[in-house]
Image (cartoon, rainbow, N blue to C red; front, side, top):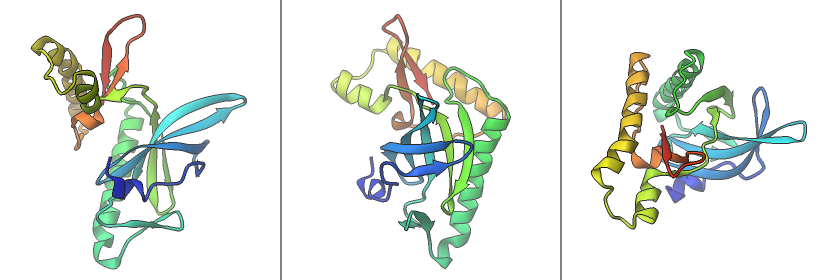
Length: 189
């Protein structure tokens, strides 16, 4: 996680308002184009967790008083990126793309001079952490590697058929979720 970007993250307990109110619980990741949070919303007494991706191009902006702020020279780049971020999330949501290896998008929110999309929260760890911690930096045997990459490739192929391009496929962005009643892992992009 990019600590410089993480230092610009929304504080814990910040509320992001959309159709529901989502309270930030923790930062899950931070990189060049965004910050991802785990959030919670309540339906009665039932807590439901989601992941929220915030558009935050760290090399062109900063957070001031909770809002995305940037200077005139980068205005067009930041706003074009924001429009692309929103349109891709809206397209994924509206096209109802369902696949067990693609995270579902529930809502797109425009607030604080930026945008957020609310996704299902996948409990697990990313491929990079899995390889470094579980595998102690040892490469996966070919059959295990194929078992993880084939579903990812099928998910990417489905996105491409819907004219959606994922621009950041990397081990950090593939979460491995435990499969109930088995030792298997479900990779989710």
